[in-house]
Image (cartoon, rainbow, N blue to C red):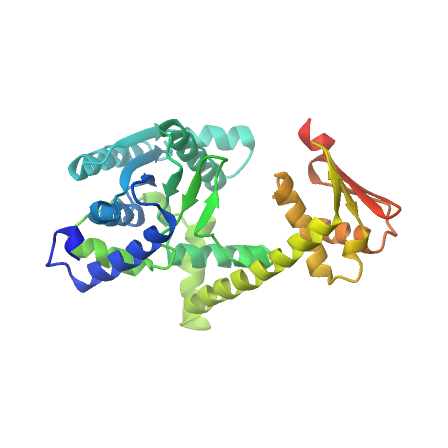
Amino acid sequence: MAATGDNLLTDSTRKFLNVLRSSLASIVAEGSSLLIGVSGGADSVALLRGICLLRDELRIHPTVVHVNHQLRGSESDQDANWARDLCQRLDVPIQVVEVDVSEQATNRRIGIEEAARDARYEALTREAERLNISTIALAHNADDQIETVLHHLLRGTGLAGLKGMPSSRALSDRVRIVRPLLSIKRAEIETFLLSLGQDFRSDSSNLDTSLTRNFLRHELLPLLEQRLNPQVREHLLRLTQQASEWHDILQQQASEILKAALLDESPSVVRLRCEPFKDQPRPLVREAFVALWAHRGWPRQAMAYSHWEALAELAQNGDSKSVNLPLKVRARRRGRLIEVDATGLLT
């Protein structure tokens, strides 16, 4: 661990840094600038401290963005000031971005959790593009992954939802996010901070169990461990890994079917041959249409299982001649072709 300049690191510190080093080495090129989302909570502070301990070794140039959601009055402002002080001590540049999440939630008629998440990603993307930084590191950990998968499961997700959060995904044409702590548990993160003598901020809203994620974390998961299985978290993580493996296989085969079916496309209309869908397993056909939406960059949030199934039925049987889909998208069967018209979506 000579790269950190400290031969007295504890075993927990070494373990944390070894996992972080391996994750960063596989996703961030040497010499790269890296934007780090830091709220002041334990997870993001641990990510920042770990990267600072490794930055000379990996030749990473970190910059921090703190998003002030303005949801907790003076407490939110104190978090921002605390983050500024920490970054000054660590010699890391910091940008503080203020967002009125309550106003956005009201205007868009969505919940506070969703509005805060969207505002955070928008602010991070905007700052990364402004600073010409292509990679944003977020501090989601293994416990966050477990809570995400459980939430998806209870909402009736498909196989894709059981994959949980990916370790990397694009936010825009120029920016991607990476999650180097996804394999590290929250308890290990707090042990790492304790070994450094590093404090962190506690968000009082994290105790509000009227918010879905807090309910899962503080009430449902402990109840499942107590009443059903003490290993429920490990089993959910294993389910995530298995779902990811199978979904990757499904996506690859579905992409090949879509490639064979694609006849032509314009900015608003896609035409598909029906023949490649014939005699294919129904899950593959549904996934081929999911791949089409991804290929076109069309929003999928409003698409439910029933919509993908209706498209598959149209492609394989053709008894129904048209399907009306969310966001004014319409699919029509014309002989041996399917026409997907997204004119309404794009206007």
